[in-house]
Image 1 (cartoon, rainbow, N blue to C red):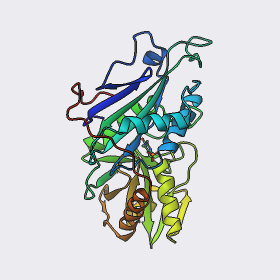
Image 2: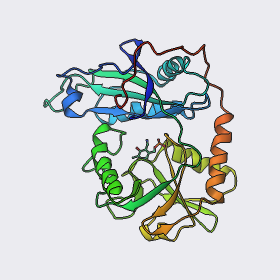
Image 3: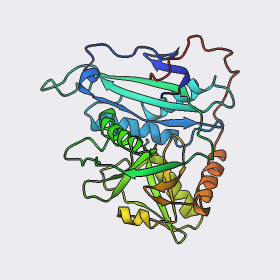
Image 4: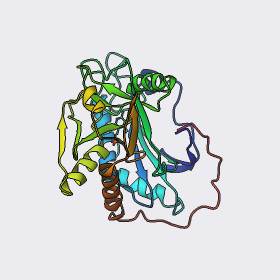
Length: 307
Ligand code: PMP
């Protein structure tokens, strides 16, 4: 993360202070892109859905032909251990990662038994509740499973999202509303997307081409439990133009109101406020992440933008 500070890294059986070297020039993943990651969060000393993020990184590794080396239970334990020394107000981005060290059959594949693992923890503040986003269209689409490893949260998918983001920023917006291969709305370059019409909530149905996120599933569950109708269905760009409210969901900010899609403007309405409240109430109901006394100073200066 660009703003990450107070970085801690788990690598080869120990926690290290700072953003440390974890790859070698001949590591298979370093040049073949066989690398997966997941992003979880600790904020207000809660780590929502940490187990689901750990499960997903193991599934992502398998989707790229790697054998995950850490069980979900062990990964959760490790992460809780690493989080202990962050201060009570620290918001931490939690990133477990796997990559391949050796080539397998045919040379470009990964030897599944040569999987390396690291966890990077970085202090990244939660965006303020007042934060919002603006969206525009992009010429770049989500790929399908036939042409990309969309069944994994894989680093090699993100250059496509990066060019969507660059195009949106060049047009004066903060993110892109992205189509799937059929031209229907899939997600944004960094998050899942929801819209509200006449008090009912709609989000693109998971069709295997975009990351149907853990935060998306959590919001759907919480809204339904609160009696709100949530439809997972095919949605067009015109559906979004006709929406009353639009919001993004993802691990980093949990929920972000959208105030504009090109020249269409949206209010920060009652459903967004309800979804935010439901998420925070649920997060506060979770057991607190145990804390020891915070460290006075990191032993080594963090390197912003590295991870
Ligand atoms: N789509 C993309 C492209 C993402 O990068 C993310 C963030 N991980 C999401 C959706 C949201 O997924 P999650 O809620 O699991 O973080």
